[in-house]
Structure formats: C-alpha cells, structure tokens
Length: 131
Image 1 (cartoon, helix red, strand yellow):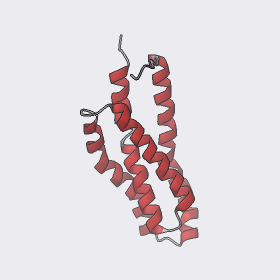
Image 2 (cartoon, rainbow, N blue to C red):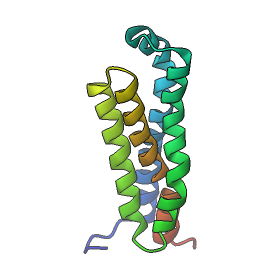
Image 3 (cartoon, rainbow, N blue to C red):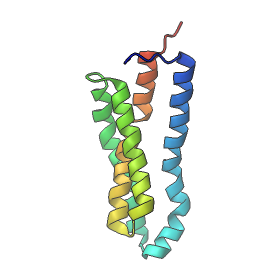
C-alpha cells in the first residue's frame, strides 16, 4: 500500500464520509430545479433530459467501472469516480448556463457517481479484514 498503512476503522470512516459527500450531489439538483428552469427558460422536457443525463451516464458507466476493479486496484477506480463527480459538480456550479452545458456536466457527475458506490464497497472488501 505504498508504505502507508491505514487502520480498517479509519478506512471505513473515510469511505463512508466520502460516500455521504458524493451522494449529496445526486440530491441537490432536483431541489434547485425550479429556479434553474426559470433562469434558463427550460421546458419541462429539457429539465427532464438534464436530470436523466445524470442517471443515464451512471447506468451506462457502472458495468464498465465495476468490471475495471477486477483488473486494476479498486482504489484507483474509486478515486477516479470521486474526482469526476467533484469536477462535474464544481463545473456545473461555475459554468452551467443553459441546457447543453447543464446536460453535459450532469452526465459527467453521473459517470463519476458510477465509480463510487460499488467500487467503494469493493475497496472496503479488498482492504478490510472481516475478522
């Protein structure tokens, strides 16, 4: 592990804390949706597409990213997922100004989200002794 050993309890706490923060991103946008629709003059269909982009990217990416954990270290896939989620949410807040930018940035966040949940469980299963 690169010379640094982390206790099982600390690893579980870190991954659980990261999971809480990553999961928040799935919930904030629906709460802000009415204001975004008004500001960007989005139709109900466009708002639905933006919401769907997150879950569609998640759905398509989960099989790929989870399968990758059989070939490469789950920690790398997990960190990629967290990074993509953070970048997607950060750029959404900084750059999204309408349908296309919001759609693409929500898809990026969905891709990242796909790399966190199941890969986080795999990371814990690989690193934490069940005894």
